[in-house]
Length: 485
Image 1 (tube, rainbow, N blue to C red):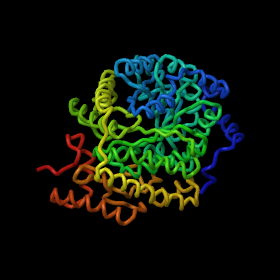
Image 2: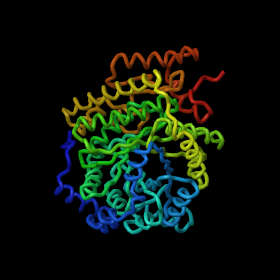
Image 3: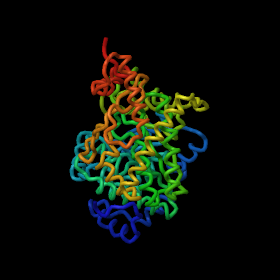
Image 4: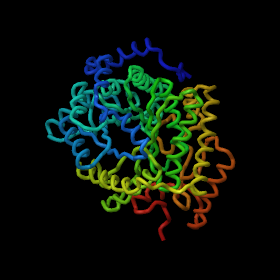
């Protein structure tokens, strides 16, 4: 075990490390922290993510946000303006390209040049580090909504420096959620420490009176992730961020498809996170939630894709999520057109507006789901704290080593990969194999019974074939991967 611990980075150490971080690419040299803080303070309120999320939270509103990013700034501004005006988005993203996510700035530079030559984006996102401070500010100043950085970067320090100084008011990711589902060989000690720097930077802005929102990536691998597993990661990343001085957090969850379970997940996520933050002494955290529409395979047929989008919009609205990340009807085909992106937004907006004054009744089934999620999360987090001898950062690393935290279908070699999820007979995600998760016996029995019930209905054993069938089910027009007649 390295020197990693859940402790606020001392200011002198942080400021010294900044000098090294900013030297990783020439655009870093243009960042002056005092000037950047003043630039953020001068942003109008309608461009500040934390303020908009707080207003939505108070008014019981579910905001809609797309995914979007292209290589060149003028095209990016055109795309995001279109999603604001035609798509009726409430919040905007800038998705960062894959080269930048791997800190491959030379390759990103080539991608910019090729995009300029070809007259269209040759990258799958916006290389913010290469474009630098002034170009980031040009983007922010050209738009009328708050903008979030969305990426997938294990070492996101330089990207954070440039985009925060560039006027972005929300930063996605975390040392667990942008490692385990995204990288194969990067150690958790490294990514947790690198993300402590990111959170310390945002905490530093906060100390100077600048509210920047942080959003751990909730869906993880986006494939049949049991709610308790993603909740554990979200809460751990919230605790790690809070220690570094972050005050505004949006915790997320990826849609699984069973309405009752999805509503239970969002409701318990906020309750559990507030409980753990409070227990650890972080009393002044402002917490909101984000619901990610279905992250798995989509139907190729546009009409069917709209149905999947609309189901996600419904679950987001009825769960009371503060915002929903919207998919497009071209999801199965690759990068969508701006028109398709706007269409997904408008379909979502219509449903969210129609359901604004409705909620799901607190039934016995919903209560049971919530109770089960809470039991699982507490059992896992209690063990994480025990393994870390009270330190959440150390506990996280040791928990992954022991399989106490385990993310299904993750590429990381630091993830055990022993748990197997499958749907029960009403489409809720259960554990076919609990691996080394420290779940109570009654919880294990519950999952086993639910899957046995499906097996009996389908006249087959609950085996790995169920998992495979469930992964492909929505793309084939169903939620549960039933055997073909």
